[in-house]
Each structure stands twice: as structure tokens, then as C-alpha cells.
Image 1: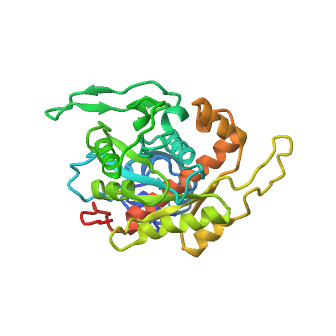
Image 2: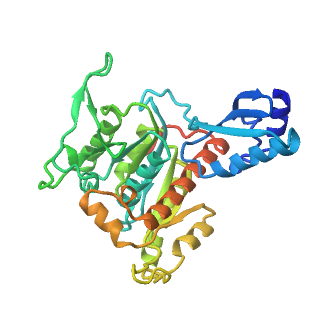
Image 3: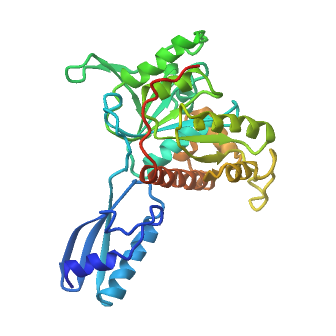
Amino acid sequence: MTEDQIISALGNVIEPDLGKDLVTLNMVKDIAIDGDKVSFTVVLTTPACPMKDMINGACVNAVKLLVNKNASVKVNFTSNTSTKRQDSNKVLPGVKNIIAVVSGKGGVGKSTISANLALALAHGGARVGLMDADIYGPSVPIMFGVRGERPMMMNVGEEKAKIVPLERYGIKLMSIGLLVDEKNAVVWRGPMASSAIKQFVTDVHWGELDYLVIDMPPGTGDIHLTLMQTVPVTGVIVVTTPQDVALADAKKGIAMFGQAQLRVPIIGLVENMSYFTPAELPGHKYYIFGKDGGKRLAEEYDLPLLGQIPLVQSIREGGDQGIPVMVSDDEISKHALMEFAGNAARSIAMRNADFSATTVQETITA
């Protein structure tokens, strides 16, 4: 076997999301051949790639069928998370992808989705941060069991001292709830809330991250516009429930990011509280809030449906107890969330391959 033969064979293995072969995408590295033994490394576009097993099988088959049927093939995997940032990188310089999780209305589980998305991406090996941008209703301190804790300050090079995010369960966290007494209401006008969001971006030392997940407040207002003016958002994930009132408001969120002055790609839609399955009747599904509303909405707007998350008591309990379901023993809920996160990571990689870079929106007006 020769290296050229291996490269030629792997030129027939198509990356399922990007639609091109591994060699053209420059994803094959470090080919080593020793008799009938061959090993090489495939560089994935995200550590959370759900297609890893499929790519592994396709690579092994290609070498055996096209080069040597007796070959012993070992495929190693590493990742270089794709990014489409083409700004000056002065803001969040070490962050590859900035993902805003939005909803048209409150109460659809957006913070739960944001928290468990961040944890699921980290579970796949990615470096992840979670920014709680819901100034008036911060949930991160409760959901991660860090109520009452305060972040520290540190000097970063020649820059002024920056806030160091808390770390819990392998991800970095920042929330207004970590800076103010939770018993006090945050009674701020729009400009003050917007200023706080800018500080979370510019005055927090996020470091090197593959994904920064931003839990946005519900609606379509000042904070959303401020974020678009401050950072180049990679894309948006829209959260809804199946019921009509949530779908109507989700449409407004979709419309907001599709406006000409924003043009931020929508990575996909996730339907939360899709159905209820009692523990004693695991084969039954009860569609309490309606059936497939999110699926129909995704089809209407030609968006990927990233997942349908069931209504499970342990998801609610985990959030209230500071132990998110992704770090619990609830394998059924974890499976649904891992599938959602994998689809989100794929959709982000496809967005980075297929669309032009999102830039900071300098001219947004209310």
C-alpha cells in the first residue's frame, strides 16, 4: 500500500453534511503505513460530530475495497471546529462560534435548552461557554447550582482587569444573577440592560471557545439588537413548544433575524415539551401541548428541525436543583438532548461551509 493509494481511496468518502469528499475538504492527516496496517487521522469540523461512526465505517470500507482487502485500518479522529468569523476578532477573539438561543415568548424552556445544549456540546469534547443574557430573569445561577457565588477579576496581558467566568460541569458561565443579589429586581431601562450585555462580551475573559451559547431574553427587543451590534453571531436557534400561541411568537423571532438589516442565519428550530411519557408507561406519548407544531413550523420556513425534547419531570427537577439533566442519570432525556446538540453542531458546520460570514451589524436602529 502507498500513501497515494490511500488518498485516492479516501477521495471516495463523502462528508455527509458538507457534500464533498474528505480529501477535497483537507480532512485527512498523518497517514502511516506498516505492511498491511494503515492509520490516519480525520479532522472533524466539530468535536460533537454525530456522523463519526458513519465516517469511520466509510473510510475502512474504502481502503479495504479499493486498496487492500486484508488491510488493518485504524481511523483516528480529531477536530478543528469550523468558524466563519471574518471580523477583526477584537471582540471575543478566542471564540469560534457565537450561538444565540431565542424564543418569541417566555415559558417555552429556552434557558433549559441553552444550558443542556452547552453541556451536550462540551460532552462531545468542545470548549463551551454559556452567557445568560436574560437580564431581567436570569436562570443560570439556579440551573447550575451557583447561587450566591461571585466571579473573580484577573489581569489579562496589558488589558484592564476582566471578569473570570465561573466554571461548572466543564463549561464557563456568566450571568447578571452572579453579580447582583437575587432578592433584588433588576429595574433597568433598555440602555442599561444593553450596556450590561456589552460588558458580558467585552469585559469577561472567555478565553478559547469552540462555542459560546447565549441564552437570550424572550421577545425581539433592545438586547437582541445590541448583541448583533456588538458581536458577529454565527447563527440563531429558535425554541418553541408545539402549541399555537408559542408558534405564533416563534414566527416573530424567525422574522426578526431574517430582516435585511440583520440577516443572521437561523441554524434551526427545536421543539421543547413535545410530548409527555409517564415513567410507568414508557411506550406511551401524550401530546399535552399539541403534536408536531414545531415540525410544521420548520417545514413552513424551510428550517432544520434540530430536535423534539420530551416533557420529563427530571428535566424540570434537574434545573431547579442545580444539576442539569445532561449531567444526571436520566438516559432517555440525555439521548434526546445529545441528538439535538449533534444536529445543532452539524447545522453550524454546514452554515459555516455554505454561507458568508455574519458581520457585526453597525447600522441597526430601533
